[in-house]
Image (cartoon, rainbow, N blue to C red; front, side, top):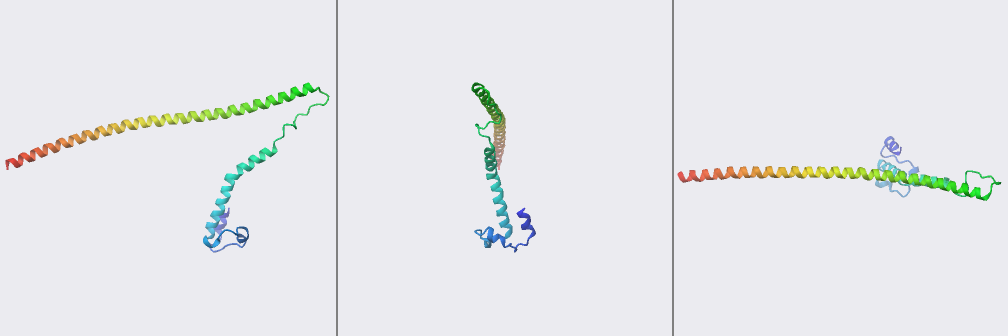
Length: 165
């Protein structure tokens, strides 16, 4: 958005509020479009690095503590029943955690398998490339041998020609 303002204003226009809000920035070293680029870059970096942290902090602050259960237990029930409900809730939480861990482990395993398949594909291509390089080297050797034979024949013919002169 600030880039749009830099496009709208002429290159010599610097609004006065910039000097109060961004006082440490040396305006005399950069034209306003470069300054707007700097501000845009600053906000993009801020959003990229700090927004995930802020959302995670917000999630953590909204969590209900373990002591304050969302399921009300009647006060007339015996203590053993309350303990069994709490243990059941704890077991359900553990099962949910295990399911989450299983899902993450499964995605990790799938990622490793895809990486392994890519590595195998690269190794196969390297082998094929090595074979092609070997074939090219053999062809070069054959061409070199042919050229040497032709040169030897020519030099032999030239020597005989000079002898017969």
